[in-house]
Length: 117
Image 1 (cartoon, rainbow, N blue to C red):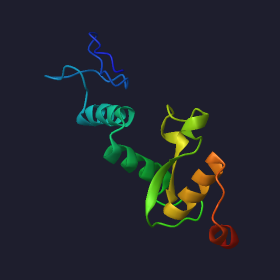
Image 2 (tube, helix red, strand yellow):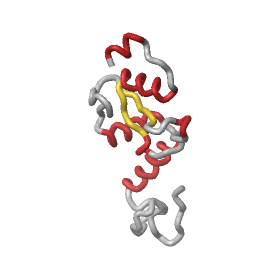
Image 3 (cartoon, rainbow, N blue to C red):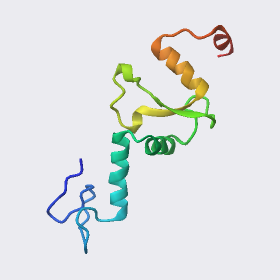
């Protein structure tokens, strides 16, 4: 994923020269970036939710609520959206997430939900 260059350049791809005792990353920020990318690819939930929330402004993408947020695939996994980057994810509050999931799977809503929504 991040090759260990032998030409004295940073492995994150920033092009910075390795100075002093540095052998792979030019700065601590480069190292933290690489670890964050790895955490996202590895599916580490805490890091993943942090970056999705930061990317999306910590609000429900539908109703703009800030309560009970869940990470949701914009393109559902069943339609090929599982192996995507952060741009395929959004934050939804619980009720918007339930409505979207029901729609994605073709499930009918309860009568009380259909009347209120």
